[in-house]
Image (cartoon, rainbow, N blue to C red):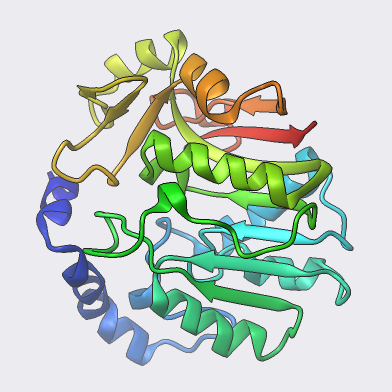
Length: 273
């Protein structure tokens, strides 16, 4: 119910609602310069720093992320991954992040880039009806980075808010900008036999609107939550003739025991051929 109420609010108002809710706490709290105010955090829920550290641990342990890697952060948000990476990546690494929310990019530039010059953030005004009322088409956006430049990329809770043509375009661009054998850590909501059975028994998080190869949680806000049929995702979007899946960990969003999952969402670690 709360999710539906939140989605019913115009996207330009959602940030202000959060800022108002957390304003008293933000005014009274003491925090480091590398911790954004709670009212500005629009990615994830709960322990912002702990979540970022957990993702970087997964990158290292399961994606073999090295300290000297050139790193692409797709949907860099307000620095959830960039903050812990600033302590792990060397000063010779090239970190590049981009996001559709200008306030997140501005905060990262003012607080992270100011301390770590090799961390750069770009604002890209792309249309997404969860976050923005207008913008350019993500299905035709060209990543503004050189070919074969990145050793590692992450897309955490980004493809869960994008429709197939947009995600396919992003994988086309990843094929171009990733080095051979470069790794991609990506999260999804995946519909397969096991996840479907668990989801049906867990009515709190369902995708009831079926389209061609994918499902929506809310038909009125297409970017709210998007789930992909697994075979469609592998064969039509990621395309296993150019990428291979090195690791799969299905999430606990559908009711799976948390101890069996890397994350709330389903995780693929993907290697460019």
